[in-house]
Length: 387
Image (cartoon, rainbow, N blue to C red; front, side, top):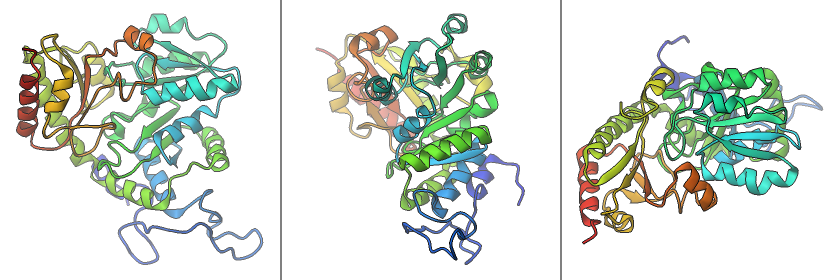
């Protein structure tokens, strides 16, 4: 079946339905193993053991590969499991460049786990192409980009960084969690690997934990497939099924997410209580034009700082509709304090240097009525004014 629209691909892409019964949904193959027809004779030539391959997970992996435009997709038990598998492609004594603000868990796994295996890292400003070019020393083997970055929403020119990295033989990895393939397709911009915390927008309902990786070439697919099977942090069939279901509504959900985010970002920018708003959908954002070139819009994540006249602890306590919680990308709006929550693993001196201040607030805008969200933000800010 052929189709042109991405929204149609969300529903009919990958492995659609079940040819045996006509079910429009891929079944949940809740099994650990598969009967073989004889020695070395696997059903359909591949079904052996669910760590190695499961039909429900295979449907999800085919779907995300199609949506990102890659050679193959891989589903993992969490976003960090996906990142860990991708980093396992590298050899000891290699060096990884990280965008200045990335998810704290990515920093932590490099700083506390892979460092024990002599995998090194450096935090660099990937928005500064001239300065970045100087960092591609012979030991650099990979660069991890988040654009928009978590939590300051800085924008990196993925195409330009990829071109420079490839001249030095450096693998380009893009965390596309904030945008999803509905808003941005990094492989088309030159990336080699795209990773997702699928717990977020792809799942969309705060009811599962999952990670996805998509690779550009068959060579990378063979290598990452070997690591996935060998290390075993695969996504189970139940969560694979839920993730396929969540992806089907990605387009309609993100359209509402973004509509609400643009509305709130405009209001926050005009509020006298707000010192700074970080949202790439605002023309005032330094990465606005670049983001327009490589993404559909500014997404649905906002970060902002209140002025010194307001107490952020009182702000968080005063919210009634928006929940204070880790994570993002669900249908419900969530707010968090990056310095003590999502980015607490990053030492304070590094957080201060890259701009993750104690007053920074990160808002994942949900799909509730935008006026209800605005009313909640307004009353919480008013309640947090220091007398």
